[in-house]
Length: 446
Image 1: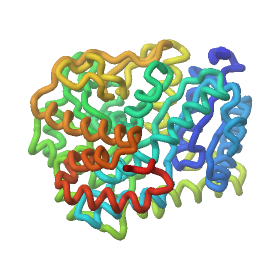
Image 2: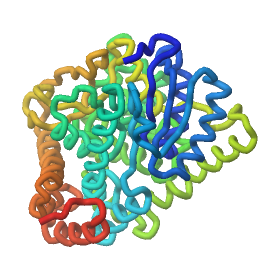
Image 3: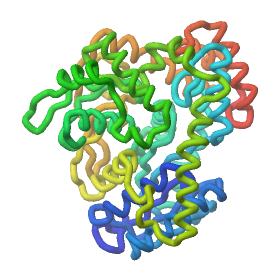
Image 4: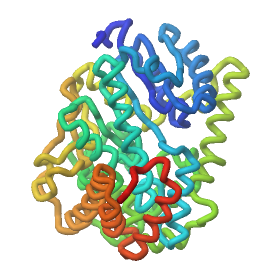
């Protein structure tokens, strides 16, 4: 790999360049250019129209803040991956059209309709697996044996499938920004920076808990946070920029803590602990898909177009990094600089949790260095965690099995096990309806 510590550093590719989350990564690359310098950045997306909007914003941003960085965007994978050293991946197979079915079909059956949890996550997972395998193979074919840093959802299913497909590839890094978003929100409640808190976290992706949060003095601040949340409620650190449903999602943490006060939960646990309540407050005709399209997507694309028209990114609300963006760039910097920074990452269990399935992909605290990701041992989890996690992992594993074996039975078993469904008859009806709209993406289930 070319030496990224020099001015003529490595080549990075953002896969999913047309994402509304890409501008944050672009800004973070500008802000971290000293510790993660690049010679070239490319964006790759199969949707040329979306990518052009973000790409023209990028041209102006880099001209003003990173003028020595060579930049381009393309729909040609060979051109995009050529001799690259890093791949930042954030794809959405099927786009918003399929996300809408992921949310609406379950709700029509009285089940949670959410893009990564429940039947929606199952459908999305079966769509994502082949595309993510293709990304890795293309990056290995055209690139310079690049590090692949993957944010693509549903991360739990994607990570498990990639581990099965590429069991010895240590340069595939699976990660999720929700734990660090929560960490930033907890830190704000305490009047601290997220970097001032060292978390102990364990679970599966979108299915975990903070068990300790220590400050620089070694004091565990979790009890204080619990009291604050129960007294004052809970909002994301960037609440002013969030769509309304996210404020409700964070607000549910207070309810989870009242019922299960031992640990601070990942917000996504609400879908598994209170599925009936979630369904009751959901509108099958106006799901989060429409909210995102009419909210964040319109705001980001409108601003990208405005910047392109006026020719400067100075003063733009997009001219700032975001937590998810800082995390992926900080991970990359820790790899190339061998910084041994700590992050909450998705890794093979392999003894991290002693009393849990060893072949699971778990989410836990790990150190990132030139060798990749090295998780810390956690020990044993309690009975409540173990019961929830074993059931969820069985669902994830059966979903991946269904993909590889093209098995209708395994798919039915997976949905039946999912805590948002439970009922086998309902699972079968859901599976059949989801199959009808996913025929172009899923393997032929037999």
